Every structure is written in structure tokens, then in C-alpha cells.
View 1 (tube, one colour):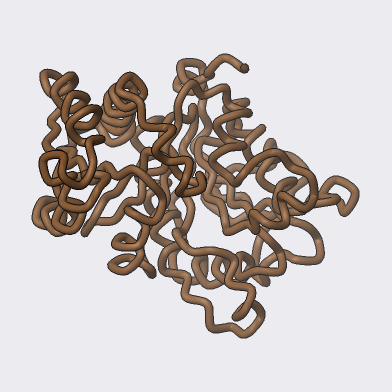
View 2 (cartoon, helix red, strand yellow):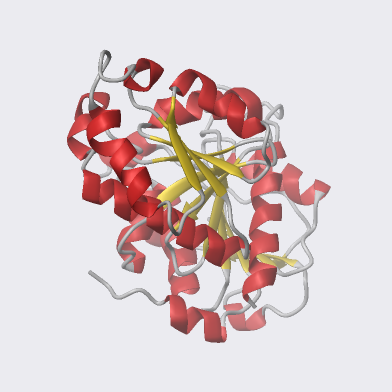
Length: 318
């Protein structure tokens, strides 16, 4: 496992944002084109893609990051050989290696197809798995962020039947401390964590499950001296509680428990921020949308918010 480079990057990071194209057959090129037409960051951005799938934008083509200077839009083309067999992975790998070297400070990723990654033989279940592995992160998490609601799932791309096997008191305690510390690091302030129950009605005092009694409540008690944390609450009310407090973050236990309410409220403006990395990484919360790709109707709102959040966090770290 590679050693984390967080301290090193803090010292020599360049205020540049790398934009990865995602799956070229999806809506990535379209949302990047629309997004940069609507919002131009105050720092340089470099689009990493291939020569046949770049967005149609007035940009500066570069062959090296040494050519990046002022706050313009730059394009960096990878060759067809370099992008085989899965272009979206090659785009991501290039931008990530720049970030780990301190040549850029943030990466904003367009959607990829996890199925294509699997079919091409890649051992990663998605962006987050790869980014955690290559950066040597000892722990990582997905924070789904908006001004209206913030959600962090404990497990992510795990089959539902396997979720219970991941719930361990020590692992939950480590996770709660980690997300508190890393959000403080990135945002420069504290948050209020609302822990969701796993079972209906948070187990109803053991009548509907014992995980809350055996694992979740003890974990909350173990960290509450240093973390502003409360719960576990019934899953069907905790998200409503969080909406009433802009500092609140819901900690939930599996993918759909958190993502269904989050996307219901923030499908067009939510952001996925990866915690635990030695650089900033954000993305929109939607997928490749192959069904509408090429029709010119994709909404860039979530991608624009991902770009804005990356720029905001980058401004704090340089």
C-alpha cells in the first residue's frame, strides 16, 4: 500500500483543476461543454480526454502542464494507444497521477461506466476504489454534498446481503472519527453528525433488530466526547432532521439508504466528494446517462456544482 502524500501536497500544490472526460459515449463531454460555458473558474482547468471526443470549446491545447499559466481552459489529449482498452480509466489515471505529484490540486470527474470497467478487467468497482488504492489512503468515504442535505454511507458499492458483515464496532468507530476529522480538514469547520439506524424504526429497542443496540449506539457513545454526533435515529426521519440544519450530515449504512433521499432532493445539484484523499476530488451525482447521450439535453447542474466545490476547497488548501 502506498504511503499517503497529504503532507507533501499541502506544501507544493499547484492551483489547477483537472477535468476528466468520463465515458466518451456518455454525457460527460456534453456536461463539461455546457458547464464551462455557464461557469468559468478563477483558476486554470485542464480537460483530460482523447482527440476524438473532446468538448467543442475554445481552449488551449497543451502537451505538458508546464504550458499552463493563467486561468484559461486547456485540453490535454491522450493517444488512442494510451486510452485502450478503457478510455475513461486512462483519463482518470492521468489526472490522478498529476494530483499525486502536486502538479494539480483538484480533480473533477465526469461519469464512468462501472460495467465497462469490469468487462475490461479492471479490479476497481469505480472511481472511489481506484483513487483510494493509488493514493494509499488508509480510509476513504463518499460524501454526498449539497446546501440542503449531506449524506455519508458507511458501505458503498457492496451487495445488500453483505452489508451486515461489514458492521463492526471498531470499524464504525474508526469511520465516525475519520469522517469528522477529514471534513474539518477540507472545510475548516465542524459538522453535526446524525446517525441513521440500520433497521426499521432503528430496531425498535431490539424488536426489529439488534445492530443499533449492539453496535451503533455504543459507537456513537465512544466518539461523542470529540465528535458532535447524535443517534441512531429511525431511518425514515433522520433525513428530515438533517434538512433543518445546514451543518448536519447523515451517516447511513448502505448505498441506497442514503442515495435515494439525497438524489430525490438533489439530482441536479448534488456533488460527490471523496474523503480521505491527498487531493480534492469531486464529481456529479448522476451516471453516464447513455440513453440521452448525444441528444443535447443533459443538465450540467450537478457537474457545475462539483466544479464550484472543487474550486472552493482548492482555494483553502493553497
